[in-house]
Length: 449
Image (tube, rainbow, N blue to C red; front, top):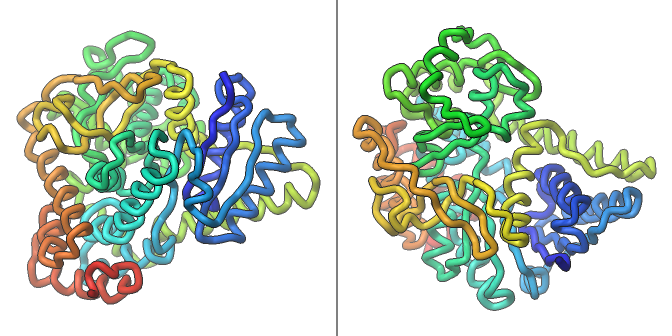
């Protein structure tokens, strides 16, 4: 088939290592050969660097891909077949404030969790709405692949803004796939062999069905867990090649003993069942926040890219196994729709009955068959009664946050934060919200009219 035109909004992001690696892979195999990638970003230095790297590597490695960048978003979007959003309003500095301001009051603030997630969404959603409107003007038939967090809230806002050809992606499901691979004692690099059918809301799903090469793993999971070391000796970062369970995975196995199913997003489920442990970790002196870790990683990636270009040795590759998973999911979704591949992917889409425990208009995270007409959600079944309340709570948290972002109603901001189990103290959360509003004032015009 002829190549497609892909516009990446946030194309200066350090995540382009993963996106370009997957683009190169699918181009070599033919599915995306001849495609043109146009990068759009607010940071011209970063987006130019990524474009130069892509162009140099494509020439050197004879890849059937072309790259360009365009600072004007309307021009970048013109004629696109696919739009991939991969941006963070306010950058990592804003995320650092989301993480650290709540901690002054003994609360947690994470990119998609609790009050930190609320303020991430309050900043991003106006830009996502503007992007959806720009797509309607410039390429109304394009698929919008949202890789911007918080995934379910961003998708909800996009759909409300009128662009229904939209789906959201999150690599959270890879957590349960990596866990299954470790329990099976196969390399995590083979985690793609595991099929996980999840249901729920982004960052609070449950894995209703789990298979390895067609074999149902749940009937044998008790035995696999019996053979595993649940002391959690492995660190969470990095994933690559570590056969041991980390403490997060060990706790997920403990949950299986009680609930009979695994969390679908192993990493983020912790905020519903291990809050005190996480508070102790995050509030400890010397704790490295994820924003700081990502900033250091991004600087490392960009320096490596500069060195490659300067040495005439530009070569596209993912930074590590976890990095590769991001690109394989995002670019994989584009490849699947463009080529009617009909593979399984975990997506954030309008429910329409796929998750029977949630409203039909909710944005749910479920497995879907990826076709030339887009994702066809797979109804994996109803959630057990024991977890329905937690998932409903996650849905209400997301919906209230989007309502707040789109209305500029400060009352809804508090309601959204209090809908999350990380916050139950009115006296404290009022102060946290007031500080976050002041810190992010420049990004929240809808609340400062």
